[in-house]
Length: 80
Image (cartoon, rainbow, N blue to C red; front, side, top):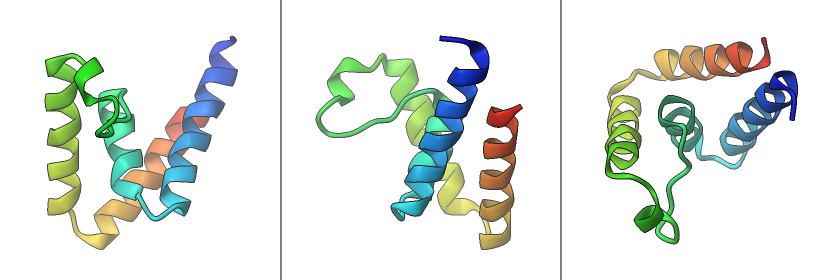
């Protein structure tokens, strides 16, 4: 898979999570490189879980304006 295709897929995944009403998951995925669920959390390295949970905490502490800016920036960067 080309780097361009990989970036497009990542951007589409983030956008999809936002559209599903789970923007915090899109943010955490972009920050950690993992998409964590109850079904797969035992397969993810401890460092990845720490990064994921840290990103979820960051998201919860952001203002609505900062959240919107963060998501827009992540999608734009992934598409470059």
